Image (tube, rainbow, N blue to C red; front, side, top):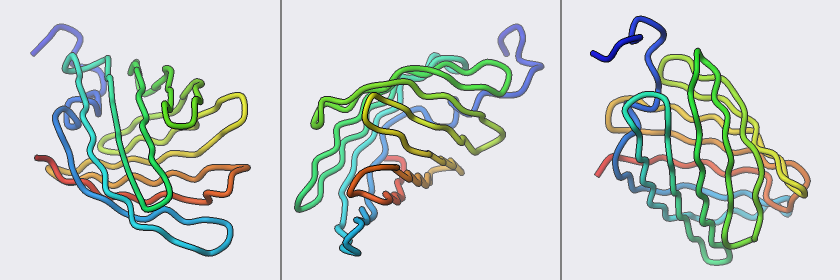
Length: 142
């Protein structure tokens, strides 16, 4: 193990690799659409994570990228979404297999909860101030 591994283990290690799956996108109108998704997480094994998640439904495309750092239970970094030309910061906490964070941009904010258990991952996104009220995903490691 690397030096300094006595501190809390990074949740990024369990996320590394390629994932596929899907879920639902919920809108203010009450409509729901099925999403199909692919995700790739590249990590240095502990403190840095680069992610790319692409999802598509009948009406929406999501192309999210992020670079995040983990230090002592806290995560922070930058995100960008190419389909909607949006970007901003992400900050939160990680504990065990769960990450809870807040993404913020000029015209967007969202709460994010991500849990990784073995080869399964659940992601919940709760945007504020948009027609989309929620995104729930379940992914499996490829």
